[in-house]
Length: 271
Image (tube, rainbow, N blue to C red; front, side, top):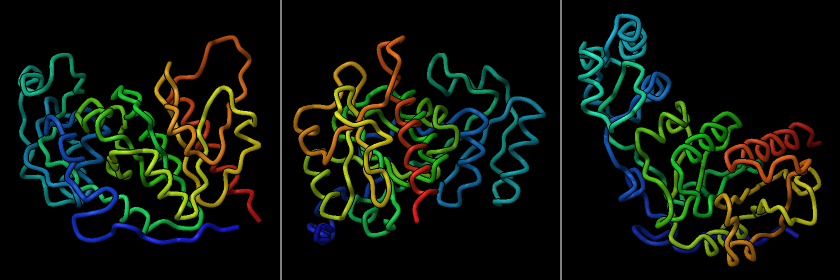
């Protein structure tokens, strides 16, 4: 039976996930770096860009090709590799390019639910805190057409340059929504006809046997600790990814990619 759909708490400034820039306090350094992250941001009309630093001719040409189309060519500044490194966190692999930009305006949960289609998938990350993992998950989400990733407000990485680089441009296509209480968020998703599947090694069914078509929320926990009890209990079902046992488990970003492939496969095979 389809769940009754309603939109609780959608008043201005209230309810789930009030619209915010970069997830409130989750926008750290305003510098993005790395070829794919910067070029994707330059090509995004919703991204406010202030300065583009490039350190060699080849990179300058790549930046000019995109910035010129967007009317942003005047923002490009030729400089040295060390000058680029100076504005970035220590050890940042910048590939001779950096972009000073404003954080993206992120939708609220209510807005994301309002635009959801009948074949919609969202990812819910339960205290996944490593920016490389989250960035890789966002990259996979963009590749499979997922438009929203939901994370817990207090236990999630900022939308930093490192995360954006790991997302390889995906941050320009996937909304990142921060919520205070993920168990309550899953209840709201279920009220909107999302089937919530938590990935857990002890799941009685495999991911292939779980319902992965229609509206789907895939819930992933932190490596090691997995899903917390209340989040686990708020899922409609738990599913596992079959493995040989040669390794203890999949990295959470790899597990997300496998789960998203299963969603895409089920969507392709629907009547």
